[in-house]
Image (cartoon, rainbow, N blue to C red; front, side, top):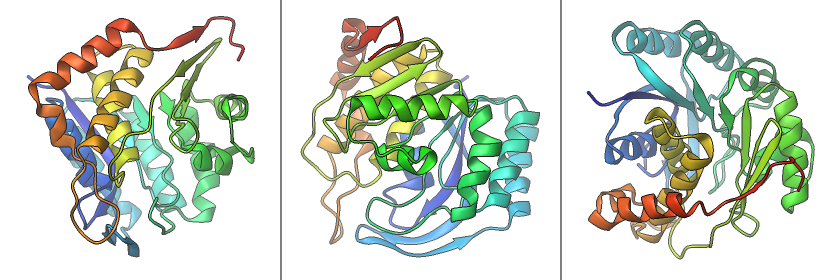
Length: 281
């Protein structure tokens, strides 16, 4: 039977990001995706026009329905919208002993606030201490730590701060720098180099964290899962679709091509990652 994974986040009416991107990613990677929707966005390739948060009890009911029936191998959180929803999600994941990837979605790339200011504190106090891995971009890392992230050293400083909040690991994504991600675990740090791909990037962050969740659910180590997820996200960008009037959404269907899995596996085998075992940059 395929592994069951869970995404907890917002719905994107334009189909490019959020729950829709996550479910597509889970599907093409061979897993069964379940979802708990926290908010409904009026959103397209031009940006987020409106956000309608769902009541925390609605989120809680969805989560209970899922775990009453399915054995969830791994979960991911995305847009959580409010502090009360953050607390409900943290409580449910803890009580059901579900490991998860925390993608701290604060603002949409195309514009629009997706996490209320007071919810950032709740995220730090209640959810980050439970996370298997936190995956901020440089702006989200800055919002969580107060550190201006502009290079690999400041990315590592922010990662250390987030680890001190209780997370098991942190990946600071470098897409807004030189495309080198930084993965820090206790006592170890890895640099995951990459290159900028031509194409639309709407939904790339969601796709990356959903792919990371998928590979972890399949039993990959975190460094291996991070390498594969990075390559998967790059392939989705390179095959993005020119739809709408704004930034094109990434195309997860690119991962179904016969040569894609070979590329992912070759990438992992070559271990395109620099491990600094002493934990120093």
